[in-house]
Image (cartoon, rainbow, N blue to C red; front, side, top):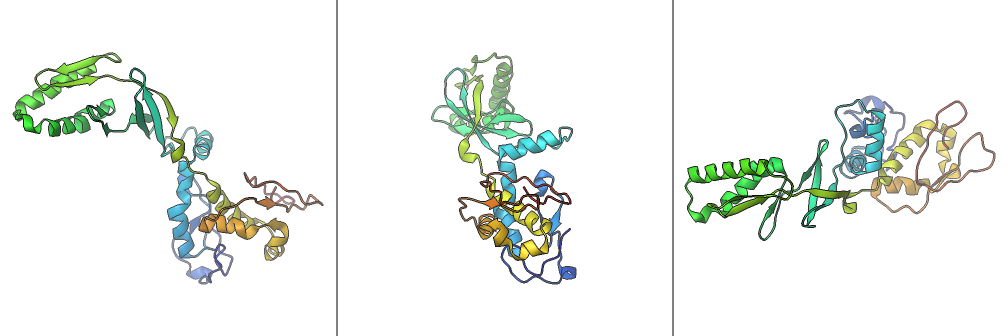
Length: 269
């Protein structure tokens, strides 16, 4: 837990005395990717902004999720991306929408002009509920309708890929399709740079010396733009960190990743 500054790290709003700061604070690295360090050097408004706009970027970025899963392979509570996926029906070449539920891919339920698309496990609930709506004007009694649907489902379970089961009485058929070429819908992929910027701002404030923090602009180019990118969503073209006691000359890197090393001599590279 960190509570050492009088003002909010991000917006410079005056904060209560450290003993009077209540709640859980702000997780520097989000809890959803196993973060546990917390800061109380942040105001309520900034915490709410990060909660609503930044912290969930970690579970919308496939690279972060894969990294967390590789670090904790024994963890049963896997972190799976909340992405949309696209696929195609292997036999009709129809475009399909998919999503991940736990460690399994499922087809998103959708209504087309003449058919429904859905996963096998959704047939008896979503599928048959929709069929009953379609057939409501056909005047089937409930017993006949339930029996025919149950028989149709049992026949479907025996099908091989691309085979068809049919109820002539209901005028309904079911084809066993096969989704393939499953890929992430790039429109659902979120860049994590605001989250990375937030984490780096925290670490800079807690790792570097007081002297450096007081003159941060002399060591870190456009530091305020990094804060604005994290807190207000401003665009950031370039970011550099050039402070290390081991280097006499300033060392510049374009801001695309942050590698932080903590030791007696090296603060940030």
